[in-house]
Image (cartoon, rainbow, N blue to C red; front, top):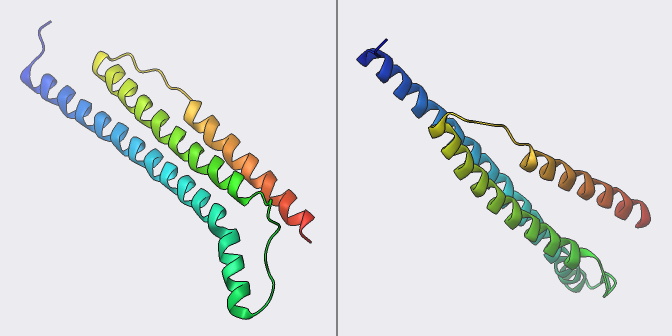
Length: 132
């Protein structure tokens, strides 16, 4: 049975909506990636901020020279970059699957984000507990 022009237009409109939803999802992952990188930058620069505040307040508030903030900050920035790259790869893969009508969901980005947040949370809890 041949498709009518209305069926083709309906399929085309649906396809556009699906592509736009895919793009919104990609942009949400990009925002998350940028947020993780920004948090990593803040963590890395926090010890510098503490030293500067100690200088201006006339107190010796310097953190230990071998603190973990630089290491954790660099790891978070790297994690943000990896999330951005994976988001782009996933976006292109889903775009192709939409066109071919073979979409398969994947949870790699969700798992990566969950594990990242879990490890950051555990680290912060341990860090705050030991600094009491």
